[in-house]
Amino acid sequence: MKKYFIKSFLILILIVLGIFAKYYFEEINFSKLNFVHRFVLDRVLNEWENEMSFLPSHERGIVEYASLMNLLGTLECSFVERIFEINPVDLGFKGKFFTLEKPENLLRIESVTLNRKGEGYETGISYLPSHVNNDYELMMIEMEKQIGKKLFIDSGYRSAGRQAYLFLFYLAKSNDYSLRENAKIIAMPGYSEHGSPNTTAIDFINANGINGYNDSQIAEDFEILEEYKWLTENGYKYNFYLSYPRENRFGVSFEPWHWHWEIKK
Ligand SMILES: [Zn+2]
Image (cartoon, rainbow, N blue to C red; front, top):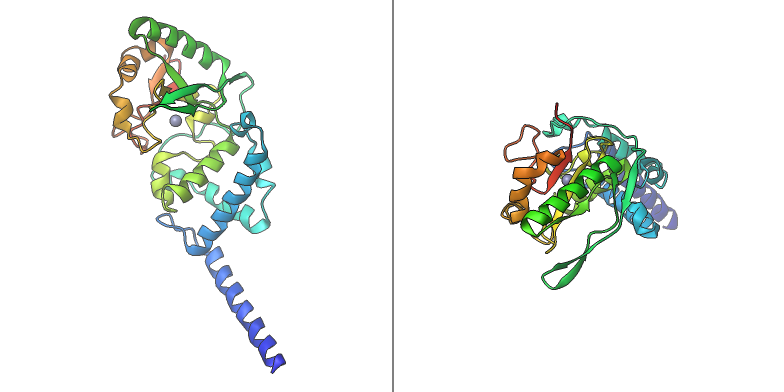
């Protein structure tokens, strides 16, 4: 009886492993990850979130991709590699590849506490290459002079590691494991303007904590701001350009808060 039980148990384990292997090695479904891929992704996020919680907050935005990958087991690691080997064009994203290298002139910008509906909102520590920060500061001096308001940095430079974490985080938490939907709102590592060492993007937020994308806000909440109107009229004087207007050619949703730095010839 005992022998029979052990034999059945082993057969059951083999069947479970067989099913796991079948779905693990199955091609990645861009519309919705299969249940094994979802399971592996959740484990990856757990590991990374755990690691991130031990890092001092100023290091989270510039965490190295390799150090995150080193935390993972073989199956998790190769799954993440398979995700990031997908050509983003196949997901509908048409932006260009920048680099995975870090800029050398990064400046650390301290967190600011904003007042969002009576509650404090921390922007968190961010980073910008010095040439981008210089123009941002000059632009804010002029904005404040003209309309008595300014914009803060909600997100500046992000390392490839940070971008990888955010891509997988939004894939699981906001986009129901659909790579296609996810690609509309967040770029893969190397493809984000937030990771571009020269033409770096800033996500702006105003003094009342309005950025147009979190705390159940929508893009139009940012679009109606006086600060946004000022940017559309004056941003170019400081080399800042709106990257993703409505119906843009990159396949990205309208992002009125996201402006990148560029010297236009
Ligand atoms: Zn952005």
